[in-house]
Length: 252
Image (cartoon, rainbow, N blue to C red):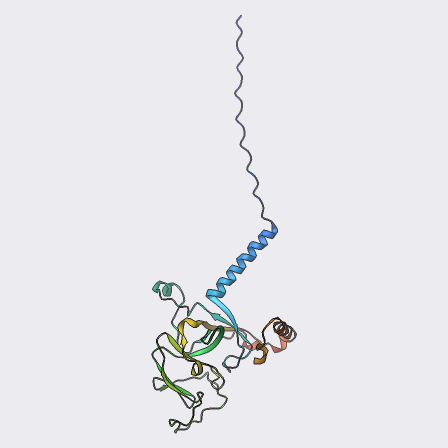
């Protein structure tokens, strides 16, 4: 009787290894990534969209008061020569009456805020504190005077060398603007330091997000000690010195 060879079964294929469980981010890393994202977003918004600005002097009274804190729209007046940018973004030209924040031409590290009065190519003159553009008086309901204009019909005679009363005539150069404070008797503006280049304009004042009753002297000192004193002052008098009725007022 012949012996039959036993058939051996083929070995089973090895099962694929189970996928490794994804490594979970540490809590520290998650917080770091969230913080980094927030910082980048805040820097982007501050650089290109909106920026906070506070009023340290009375040059824009009674429209803007010392201690008003503003939001400045940096996008609407951004230089944008490309037509596609103007089509896609809310960008427009600077207009007369815009309240703008800009780099002070004599010290670009400082920011100023004034109202645009003269546009490129226009001839501007101040007679008896009143502004004339191309020979026509400018209607300015926002203007405040410490001493009202005299109203004298003889003021065309050269009787005053005070730039608050008499200035010009001057023609605004191309690419520049003539700006003035609403408080005409207490404003360091284009009458004293000249025209404002377009590239120095940072944005248009949008709205008051907080207003705190202050004095100009409160913003003179700089440094850590002065900042701490202001912080303690605000914490102590926040409720009583906040001008609640001005919050969220648009800047006009």
